[in-house]
Image (cartoon, rainbow, N blue to C red; front, side, top):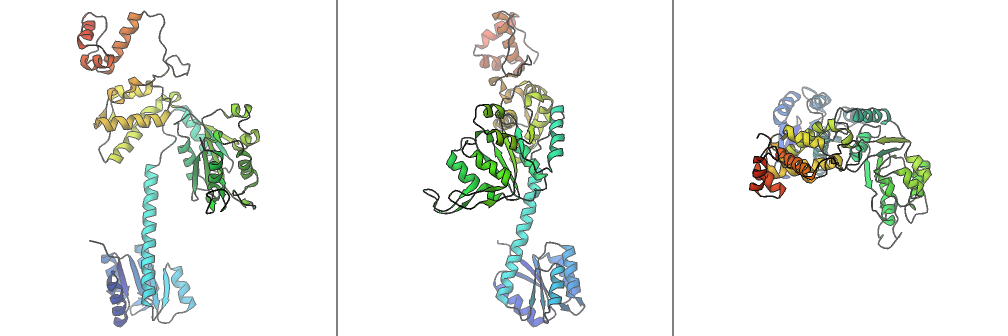
Length: 458
């Protein structure tokens, strides 16, 4: 059944009430009548209307007093005020008190109906927008989760520069959260109520990148049948985030420099400059100084976008933050699935901390999401993560991400250590360890029985 919009109609003239009610109900609205301020208050409390129509003059009080009461009870309820003696002063008072509209009797019923529908639609839009913003706040990713010294330094720097208008360059490895940090900066900046536009420049051809950034006029090139505003134009007064800025075509770089220095740009095919007010946040995983040395990136543009440099540390430099990051990711996964909380056992947490994470937080999210989806259990184990198929974290502190082996060991000793590690990960299970090692169960059992390898207690 379709829910009908509810309207509270307050007027001491029964004839007027009848005509308005009949007209509105014939068009699908549900109308509750009241003839006085007191009755209106009671009906409003019990009927919870979507909108109200009230007379300016009522037998037991002023319609504006009733308007104030309704607005105090529900600030979002749209109220239309009717009056038999319309004056500019009365209209101004009503609008100041929060009235949606002020109409003079005899009112045109089609116009009243249209105003009601528009007012209710606007109210619902505002409510949905508030819900969306509230949900977004709840689901917003925190770029500073953890307690490591590296992430605390980043947080302190972000708070110092968040109100600045200077361009920011965020540097960090793939998947480290550069986009999350850029959005956090925007949402905590003086431009937070304006638009945040982002564009990943990696792999974009020059023509496509230009039209995306600057827009084009009709007929600027084959296929440009309509004029199109660019990202910079749409983001006026807001923030533009250019991810992988190091990949921008050299021929586009001078135009971007003009935007930063003169706050002007020109659409493709246009002969007039347009003025724009944006804050630029850029990001890259590449060595920008090396790109400048190779003449792949303009030195003057590099200096312009790097007024405030920020570096996001990779996960391998903040392994102590991994448990809380994993907990947050699993909480979000559980919420999306509508299930109970998902946790990691101790061995799984240790495994996460020992892994090198070349793909950083993005890779960890993928690993945990896959594990939660496949296992459908509330507690994930080291076996569910399947990190044994991935590259382990460096053990020698050289930061190159490659596993190192003690070359003083014999081949037999290396084999024994590897088998023991797999047995440990499989909680001592001969069947599962043999399957992973690619040997028969009896072969592995004999190795354990002969003490060639130590089997951990299950």
